[in-house]
Length: 356
Image (cartoon, rainbow, N blue to C red; front, side, top):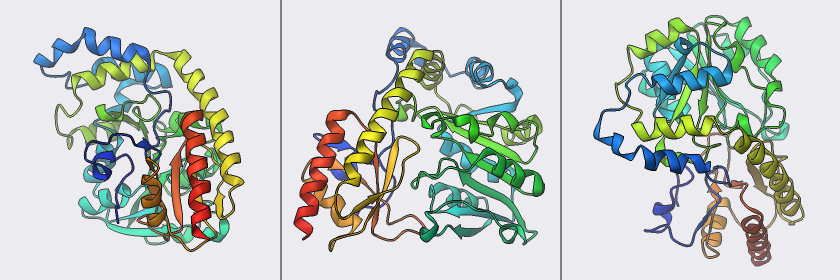
């Protein structure tokens, strides 16, 4: 049985050919056209070391989100930053609200912290509700929360997060907003604007999922300037390559791409949800971003078996059985183009018929 992250097409087939990848949640429109142009024009810059401080990109990010440059730290994908945060803080214990991105717990373990998994309940739709009991142990000094959550898609209101952050000043709250740009009315949920004012709040964002170039690996975090300085002392130099910096800067400048992506994803998200809802034996959760979380409710099959079955149709899905708190009846699919989404729906209809 294959386990791990989505998007590992070469682990499925040697060359990854003829596979429609629904396992990774990447912008179905790809990357902005300007990205390719900028990379070709500046390709020869790979002969030199990259800007160690990511100065131009930090300036671009700062202007876009309304923060000072010294409150921003750029990394080789958001995952590098998830590992850097506890490494710089050395928390004794960390809380992870499960099921969620597996690297949160691993990042805590690598820093020497004990991990406390707070598993959200399936019977409550995996909705986040925090309780004082999560933080009664005074050795809990860090908490990871994904918003919207991966893989369930559940959202937490901004007011709830800020209340928690202010209530427990000894705990550093790391909020993963990797998919927030795909969300309708993101201002209701994002706490990026408060990240510099609250010293125990760190917001991490990916630049590769929305802008469609995960192979380049780039993300950033926003927090109080003093915390950025402490993290920089623990960060390896030159982790962000020249081409990634150029691509991110070009993508951030493309305002039209943002509006076009959001309109496209909202339409296809609704289409895919409606189509999957009509398949007996599947129960999709109401989507909030560019992916759908689905439970198998009928037939004698599992998500790993379904994953194998759909590969025969040239389709890869994300088996969610290796997420803490989930069993083998859950899987996740990305929102892709209309033709691809129709192909997924048809393949799942065929698969369901074979279960009976």
